[in-house]
Length: 202
Image 1 (cartoon, rainbow, N blue to C red):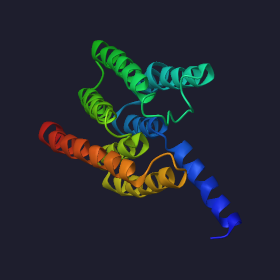
Image 2 (cartoon, one colour):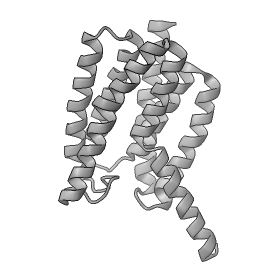
Image 3 (cartoon, rainbow, N blue to C red):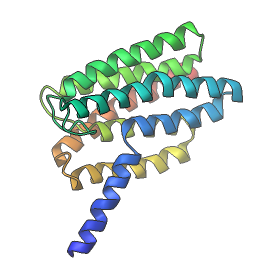
């Protein structure tokens, strides 16, 4: 591969990796979920809640730590640095879940958040041994979420997730082993979610 072509591949990988980071992928799903499942007022409330209580705090936390030198980059590529990110995420998701519960939001939405919490917990545990790819794990889970909403969307997101996984290796953010581990964890949680979702809501 020529240097020019390789640069183009790296650039495309950066675009894919940045656009489909875990937070953006989840936000895209929740927007679609709100559009399909909720009226416009309920949709607006839930989307704003997620942006205000999850997206902005987590991005702000990462950005602040990058600025302070606590994190190497916005991807939090260092395995040890990720421990504090996971702990912060747990707090944020707990607060978000509490707000959803006490404002009587949809049960199926809370159900998704529970499995999101489980995914983060397993990822955090695995982080003590290997830097499993968060991008891959979360996008695999988002694939399952989309599949439960609309199988065609699930297939489309599966293809996008494959590109995400490859991009993480090209950008040298993860080794193939770390990407495979992220995919494995995401798949296990996704299968559990799909099973219990069918048992509970279908």
